[in-house]
Length: 304
Image 1 (cartoon, helix red, strand yellow):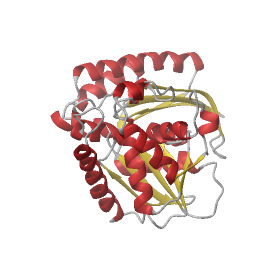
Image 2 (cartoon, rainbow, N blue to C red):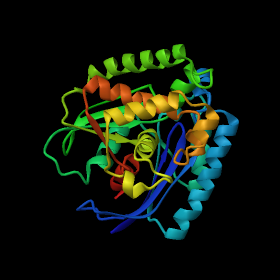
Image 3 (cartoon, rainbow, N blue to C red):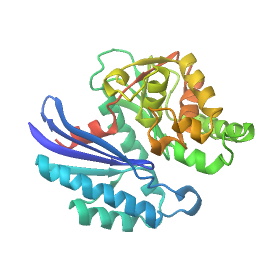
């Protein structure tokens, strides 16, 4: 077994997985998995730059993760950065800061690479013979991947909960016109994804990342976030629609009172949930299989 650390730095959160991985079988034994909301993508859609305060929040999380990695003795570390750092003019500042703290250079990967890591991490435990559509709804982008044991088609499009909220939402709760604008963006992006990925052809929809797992937690009626109950739960389209309706009608204060919503997601969860619902309606999926295993697991496997 090889002890590795994988770090996924997205638009909204930065996450760490330290695990022992068998390099031949792909068996993964999780030692530590954690997430910090840093909102690295704050304002990137508008300014094209990473904000100084967003960089400092991210570097603070990196310093905490460096300590965990040292304590657990990971032999190899891979740091993957996604949508926000792809879009930013000053991403060199981000790269230099991370390298100084962790000793590794962050890889600003393409959307297609992100999709492949997500697919590998999400489907490793699934044993079906049908094709999967893996959907990773992030803060700045959403990845669509179709395949079974291997990726057959993938596409990343610029719809994410942070990007859509910053672009369109000015009211609390969102006004009908703002919701319509989000829907229009999502539908245009889905049409773009369909040019590359046959999103309606897969037998099983697998949903990843915080927007999807939070919707699942609300739909399941959990009083506190429970990864074991959420992982591989099956949430119907009707349940997702009910959660979306509730979130879009709620104020920030009302959403904050829902215990399973992380404080860093309160302002963006409605947009993320709406992206999931639009995907289910477009593909005809009756349910989504929710996975707690995702790009982090794919990164860890790639290191080993």
